[in-house]
Image (cartoon, rainbow, N blue to C red):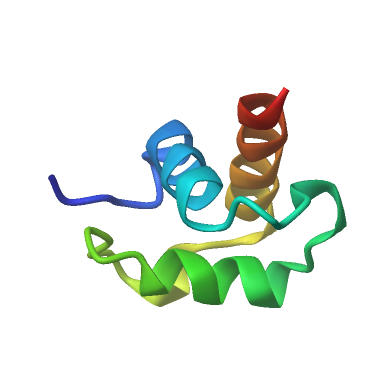
Length: 66
């Protein structure tokens, strides 16, 4: 499965599984962007992620951990 920036929930689930010790409420967008790009199934243009997309991923990740 190839992940794109629009796969917000799938990205959040992957990050939650790969970074269980990270509290997504306190991450910065530079780290979040890098972590998404490092996901093995991610294949999208790194420049397509704006603040809104990163906020959506962060919110989904927070929701995933509750």
